[in-house]
Image 1: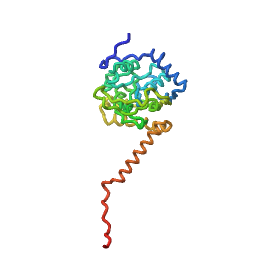
Image 2 (image 1 turned 120 degrees about the horizontal axis):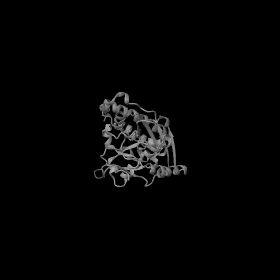
Image 3 (image 1 turned 180 degrees about the vertical axis):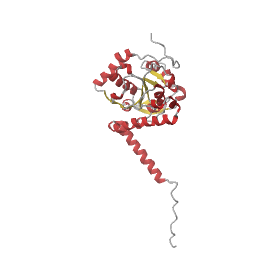
Image 4 (image 1 turned 60 degrees about the vertical axis):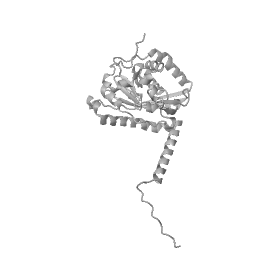
Length: 292
């Protein structure tokens, strides 16, 4: 019998159900790839450490965390399932009656644990974090590939674990699991906002996972955990790495082009409004009156 997982028990991590992954989930994913429903490409696996602690920091999109699965699949194919990351997951999702136990079997850890990264279970070496949080995977499809601001918690985790940060750009989740709109009205009831699916099933898409060279923070010492300015600076740097890759590659994706068009229209409207109303412009002077 598998051990019961408690959200507030930080003494040990849940065991990833490797039998479920190896014999059921991964074969289904590979079958869909072979059939052409999905395509799947991985770049930069040489940047993923084969041993020791590591923190993967990735963009987040889609109404279900399929992007985390494809990062896991990429790591497992390249370095073995033992290096599959445990992912920080919203506590509300883990508390859900059916969804929670399902996510736990894939190594989901409560996001609240990461507020005290020095107390994370020692057996957790490989960690996946989506620093956008739910703001990322609940954004509507017309904002595809335009990330929300990253929080700095993943930097603190990397410092606490003496782990390099591997920035990860994931493309394809926006098209696979498009969000129609962000639902906020139920947040007091369910404990989180969520993205309303544009379609009830995952759509065919071209998945691409890009691993970037590690960003090292251990040299700054453990005291850097409390240095908010340093952690924010590193978070912005890593976010910039991922966003540049998304900007370069998203033009080849339908929602990437659509999102760019929406952004251009918003910029034009804003520029037009600025020209229409300029509070610093001098008031027009009355012209000369004509003779009666």
